[in-house]
Image (cartoon, rainbow, N blue to C red):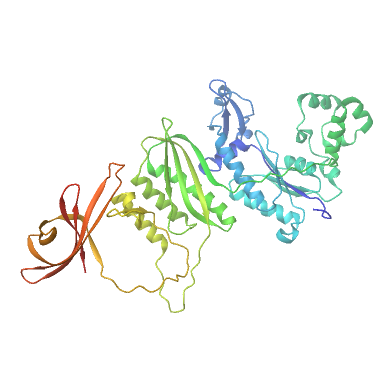
Length: 504
């Protein structure tokens, strides 16, 4: 950073507790809302939006005082929703500069980013601030933005701006003149300092900056000198950056328990939209989405949806979540919803000029989801062999498209295909010299012409799934001269013969 002039952009979102709740409740944005904190009956208003403030609702009002106002929507404070919204804002700010300092307060979001040297990427500071304003607005948060070469000057100006003019840049060297009209409240004075300045008749930063430094230090010590430097935009600052993690998460605490799936999907739709916007800003797509439902009684219900390819198609994600929750519904009323997405790279397929168009992966995902709802989740996917000689030793894994790679394996010669019979069919076998000689299969008697075997396998003596079997490959002929090639297995533990497959 040597040789580059310092310049900072401050983001300030007042009434953050109520904004964090309303960002996922767009139907309440046009109403007067107040957020209450504490346990009944000692609840107090901790955050109000502009419409409620216009009606006269103030911080610290009790529930009884708030109830005297008509047409007021009362919400309970959710620290978890605020934490998720704060993480999203820090992540958005980190997209403009890797140096971000979090200075948030209890009822307001505040962060400052070091934008020195970003002109070639994002243009002049005013353009960067307006682009940052648009990015924050897409997350459902209204904030003010101030740019200055002094850290504390940017913070003070951002706190003094209104939503009618939310972006302002302080020219270098004019910090004192721009800050002069701001009230002292932007400095976050304690009660004693506020009373002292009120007795002196000091109401603005300009009046504080005009006080003589020596006399102010004599009365207030080094604290007075620091406040005067802040009012003049001259105090230095040691920047303390944080590293916001890229976590795609959204959460909402429902105002009342929800049992209907349609009502849940209405809330999930907006949460997915925020996740997709955040993922698209990083040039990635959603590879999987995990929905965690907090149920009445303290239990949770978690489901994970993973399509074949990462995608940002909101309608597809909504359909997949709908089908999954319809097949595996929660067992109680829902109190809160949390969505956590895993990012993945978007894949592009370039087709030849005369190549036929491939089917859309989304159709396959929806089809698989419908099949899972009918036959069960454990019966859909791709078969993967287990590391065992046990008959039918395989497991089902979710279908996924492997990365493209060339194979150097030599070309395999054609072999006969074995069609497995599921379930195996019981047969009657006559043996001569401990070898199958005749088989009755599907009410037809066959004479064994050639028999290959036996191949004996056994295993897992340490578990209840102990198995042992004897396999034979037979070439048989019926009385009508029809030939049959098959795989015959005898269960050595039960002494039963079964037909497990037919060769083509």
